[in-house]
Structure formats: C-alpha cells, structure tokens
Length: 190
Image 1: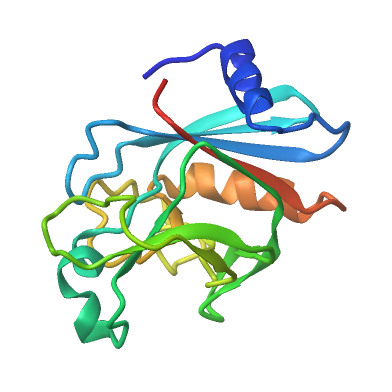
Image 2: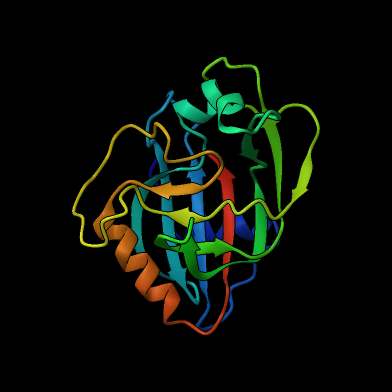
C-alpha cells in the first residue's frame, strides 16, 4: 500500500476534495485486508497540497468495539465510517474524553453500525450521519509516550487512531497551530 503524493491527491480530487493553501488535509487509506484488531491503515498529512508526513493508524474499530460493543453501553454496534468520502472541516484541536489532545470531530460523518461480532468492520445496513465524537487521537494518555502499539483493542470504537505516539504528537501540534479546521478523506485501498 504505497502511493505517490500525486496519486493520493488525484484520488481525493475524484471525490471532491479541494486543495486550499495553508490548510491541512488528512488522507487515510483503509487496508483492504482489514486484519482484525491491527493498526494496518495509512494516514498521510498534507498542507496546501504539500506532503508533510505519513504514519500508520486504524480507521476501523478494534476488538473491544467489534465484539463487546453492547457491554460499553452502545447497543447499536461499533461505528464504521463510509469510505471514499471527503469530510470538509471535520477536525479542530480539542480533547479526547477530556484527557488527551486530539483532532476533535466538529462536523458530521457518514457511518454504519456493525453489530454482528464477526471480527470484520463492515459497511452494511443503514447509513447514519452525525457528530459522534469520532476523534483522531493517539494510543496513550501519557503526553510524552514514545509507544508504538500493534493491537487496537479498546482504542477505537469509531475514532481514527494513530498508533505511533511520536507521529501523533507532530500531527496534533501542526494542526493545533493552524487557523483552519482540517479536511479529512477516508479512502478504500486503490
């Protein structure tokens, strides 16, 4: 799953993304294998069309959400985002659960609820739209952590989660200092 900057920007343009000078655009590409409970997706950060960094993330819920969503008080199922979609002005700086700096969801997303407990995050059933606080955050509440996790477990019930805390901090610092809300594109592997 390796792409050139041009391939990524051309692909998001197909779905209506616009390159805005001095504005961040996050592009995630969801791995078609969707390995259960693993950080196997890629995130690319661009500023005004210029590449900034790439890292690994998950765009899917982890084991806890897919298999035990009903025990967390969410009877509807784990949130699974609609892919091949541009979410304009989706994120601004905030806190995840009041504890961790994050890119906080401030505009609606389109999503499904997966409740079949089959270890796959599926885009099936009724399509919903709304703000569900599906934030972009890291995998450790310790702000100085250097951890890189491989298993999602309870870190995503619908959030986009960066497993490399060093990369995560750089993303947060950059977007926090920018006056614009960040656009976000979630793509299927292409």
